Amino acid sequence: FALIHAFRYLISLSGALAILNVVPCYALDGQWILLSFLELGLRSSIPNPETRGLIYTCLLLLGSILLALNIFIAMWTLFVR
Image (cartoon, rainbow, N blue to C red; front, side, top):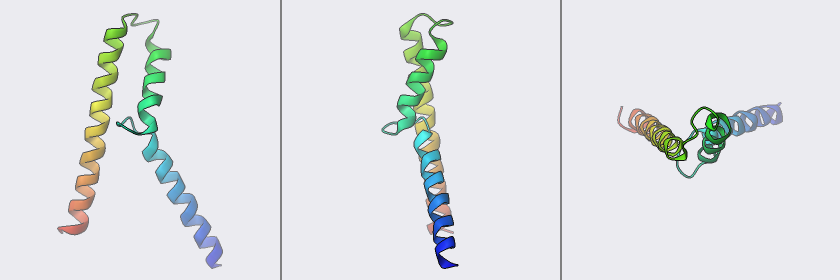
């Protein structure tokens, strides 16, 4: 019975880490996923690579800010309240 609970925790932790890793943030895999998605998806509609690069940088910065804000709020709630 305890082994089943351990497996459930392991699966939920692995799923949470996978979702976290896909966030478009610096130094995570989401950074490269976003770059590939923009290159494959927007190459025909936005042929200028500088414009695609600007979109990439803005989305990556927004994702990084949102992730940092989320971690800050979680730590604030955990330790200050």
